[in-house]
Length: 240
View 1: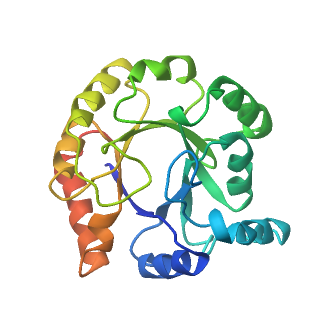
View 2: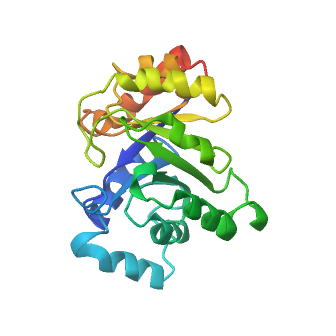
């Protein structure tokens, strides 16, 4: 069965904690969208004025809030993923998604990251996994040199990353089908404009993991809305 994962774009550490509190008992996986203000904007926590929060947490070896209750994926919208990835792993992330367009040094990134955390360090994908995100305009051919380096791909269903509440770009549906045909062994996760209306189309096209932002946060009852998404995965999700 496909997975539903809530997404948070934190405005502050307090906002992150409050958002996670609302998700306790609802789910066990959460994506935290980290926007550096350079590769994408506007900047989210902890970049900008609150960079000291990150420095303090790392210095104190502090983990992300409720780290024992949630598995965290970091959607890393950063112009320096080589530096930033290690920081978020230290804070407890178990999945890190790097955007293909964020750096011209993807080959070096994967070489270094797998040397630091990868297979030669008893790497287990269930404990730590890396994914590559592709913007709606980015050709899936870009994945070819790195398909053995990633555990999943994230396809964007919107035009501009880093912002919730955007309209759905239907071109992603054909992109899912094309990617599934070329790389049937790589799970496909979709981020951007996932709603109760778009989820069935995405699942039928071949997505196996849906990241949901504003559709959950704008709902009157998050738990009830989350349950509706889960029921769609049971009805339409043919790829587990």
